[in-house]
Amino acid sequence: MSTVRFTLLFSVIFCFSGAVVAGVSNTASADDEERRARGMAVLGSLTGQSDPRQMAAEFEADNGALGSFALDFVLGDIWSRPGLNKRDRNLIVLTMLATLHQTNQLSYYVPGGLNHGLTAVEIREIMTHVAAYAGFPRALDAMTETNRILAKLGHGPEKGKLPPAESFSNAERRERGAAVMAKLSGNPAPDPDKVITTMAGKLGPLGAYGIDFVFGEVWARSQLSRRDRSLLVVSVLTVLGRTEELHIHVPAAIRHGVTKAELEELMLTAFAYAGAPLAVEGMHVVQELK
Picture 1 (cartoon, rainbow, N blue to C red):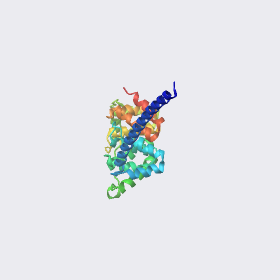
Picture 2 (tube, rainbow, N blue to C red):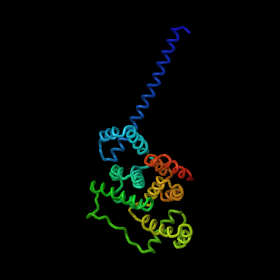
Picture 3 (cartoon, rainbow, N blue to C red):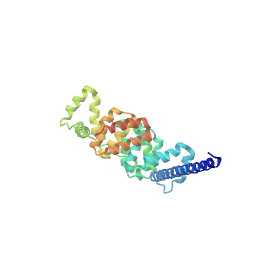
Picture 4 (cartoon, helix red, strand yellow):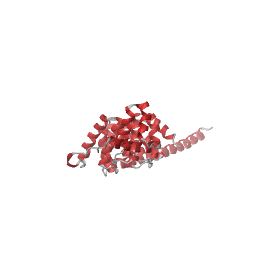
């Protein structure tokens, strides 16, 4: 091949390659801009800022690539997915943060909860329910920080005091607990004492407290719907890696009105807030649903 022909061919290839690279570059740039725009919209709704660009710039400057990923992946990709409304995703994130004892992050998501449709009563109830599944120390720490933030936002308790829990007799707690458990398990039991007797061989007194306190008092409260409580419990179990319990509560969530698609979104949210391994384990359980 002559030098002239080779030079001409090389020039054509170079120009073509340059056009391809430029096309890929332009597409990547457009994709990045779109993700960032979605992330900024979510950041704005979380914080209530109409123009969060300055906040985002400072966040990215302080955290570098980690900040970029938080804005583009967590907010731009995960939070912007249509499979779960922002109220429910905010409920899930608040639950995960309380369970993981990440109370410093509540300063973003408590205001976000209000902005996304949760009430102050519902946000506090999230922390109350977390106690039954992640323990009182984590729940109390989360409630303390939540109360501080809510008070700052003008949602402090009336006359400075939150109302105590309602009082019920032992028989009432047992009856309420049996009703909750029947719906959750899909196996109505007309005699809760027989259920206790059956459970006693495996769990001892833990079985009775589970029905009377967890189901009869916490689950039966009216401050959150059963659907919300199922989202909450599946969130707790996912980020704690309690896969065996997920096999009970994932089907229960379906019975309480949560869809399989919404449970998949919960696991994607767990990916961002608790890491891929826990999210993968939870997603396996969800995919087993028929």
